[in-house]
Length: 145
Image (tube, rainbow, N blue to C red):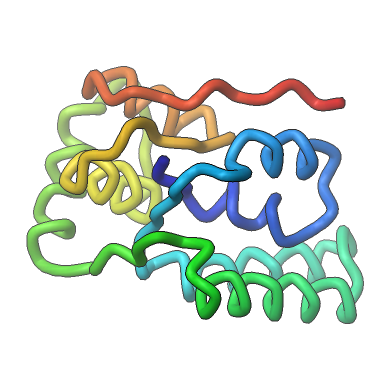
């Protein structure tokens, strides 16, 4: 299962649906893009700036992500290369005008598409809509418990 950064943030922080996403991905091989290394860090910092998390919680989330990468919780960190960048542009164009997809989200969709896998897991509606436009399988969005 391919995870985009918004799902990874849920897995390393305390959001209302964090436990549901944890259950969804537990015991499954997961992959993501190398992009997530910077994007997760950025998202955690943004959460702190908005007052949605504390500095210690943000740091703990970053450490947890780094630990999961080191310990192999992600079967593979997929490379961010020219092929992915070119495909991301195509994803944006194929999704246009229905889905206003930003480049970072398009990179995740392109990476998931190029590297196969059983499903894309994202809580972002635009990413889900872009996957639908491209015919990519989506993991079910877990209900919040």
